[in-house]
Amino acid sequence: MSNRTKAYWAVTALAALALLGSGGANATLSPPIPENMAALGYPAYFPRILGVWKILGGLALLAPRLPRLKEWAYAGVTFAMTGATASHLLNGDTLAQALPPLAVLGLALGSYALRPADRRL
Image (cartoon, rainbow, N blue to C red; front, side, top):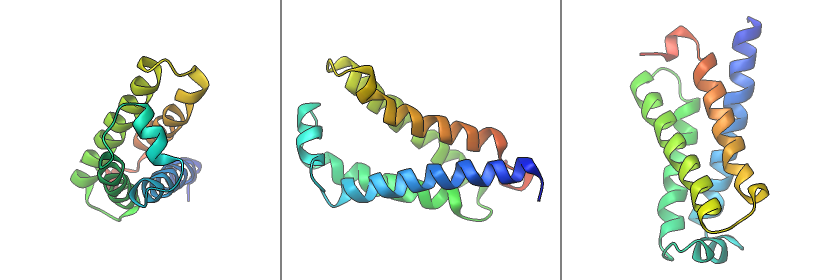
């Protein structure tokens, strides 16, 4: 296995782990998710929807083959994480509060850039 492939799997695993973990927390409304989402102005049902999509996105990044599905998953992660960052900053939160979604975005972008040929369209 090449160093590039090892790097791909490392950042992909971390991105998927972040999506699966945060998606599970969203979907089950783990504290303090409902309070945090309400503070950002989102309705009570939104974390569950977002959580299911994050879980599906994390699974798609790990699944073998399915390059078109992976393209959509990377796009979804980009939309969700830039939206989360904007929500925090536009709500008056600190940059430190906006960093976690930026970190997940960075992992997803690293995974996208390093993906092997068989995981590309």
